[in-house]
Image 1: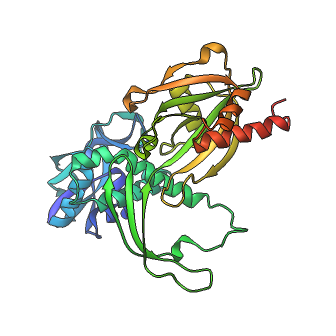
Image 2: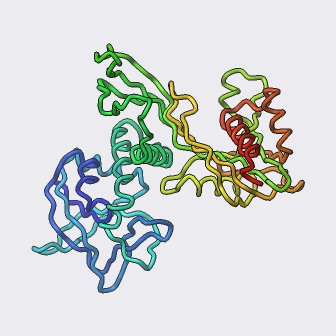
Image 3: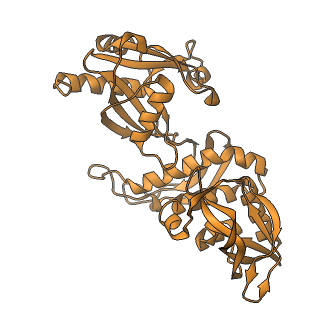
Length: 369
C-alpha cells in the first residue's frame, strides 16, 4: 500500500471516492509548520509554510489502481508530487503529497464552506475527469479542464432551475434508460453518443435509439440599446458554423455573446462580455428569455438580454480578446436599420433575430419611454 497525505478538497469523502474509484483506509494526520489557506485567485486551498502551524489532513492507504487514479487527477490539475512526513497519532508517516503552485492569501480555507459552495461543481468535474482516466494524458486533461468545468456548471444550473411543466409532459430525466454513453470527441466542445430508451406518450417504451449531440456550455447574449438615440449595437465576426455549412459569407451579425464561466450568473457574464467585445458599460438589463437554440442535437442553453448603454457615433470599433482568438467589429446602428436587417435576411442568427423582435415589441409598448 502507498501512503499519501491529502488536505483541502480531498478531505471530502464523496470527492475522494470519485477520484479513487473506491473507499480506502484513512487516518488523521497533520503537517506541522504549514497551514491551509485560500488561494488569492479563488476559493481553492493552498498548503503554505507557517511556523508553528498545523495543516489538518488525512493519510490514505492506496493500492496501485487508486494511486494511479489520484496521480492522474492531480497531474491534470497541475499538481506535483513530493515526499513529506505528516504526524499521525503514532508518529511521522512518510507519505506522498500533491501540491500546486497557488499563492496563499490571509484567510484560512474551510472544507465545510467549500462543501456548501464549490463542492458540487468539483464533484461533477471529477466525474468527467475520471471518465477519461487512461484515455488521455494529464497534459490533454489540463487543456480540457476549463471546458469540463463549464459543462459541469451548466449541468448544475440546469438541475437547479427546472422550467415549468404545465403544457409539456411532467416526465423526468431519470425516466430515460441509458444503455451506453460515450464521448468519442472532446476538445473545446465535446460530442456525446448515447444509446437509450425513453417513455412514449401512449404509456409504452421506445425501442433502443442512438442519439449524438454537441455537448456545449451555457451562454449569454446581450443586445446593447441606447433608448435616447434609439440605437443598438451588433457585433460582426467570423463563425465556424456558417463556414462548415458552406455559407459563402461566414462573417455574421450577432448580439454580444459569451460563455457563462463557472460561478458566474448570467447578468455578470453579460456585463463582462460587453466590456470584452465592445468596450461597453451596460446599465439596466432587460431579460428576454432562456432557450435551447437547437435542442435536437445541441446542449447549449442561452439566456438573452437587452442591455441599456450609451451608443454615440464613436462607439463603433474593433474588439475581442486576443487570448480567445477573437476578432470582432462593432456596429452602432439606428433601430430601424436593425429591423431592415431582419426583413432583408442579413440578420440570420437566432439570438439577434429574437433580440431585435423582442426590442421592437418592447419599444412599441413604451417600455423605454
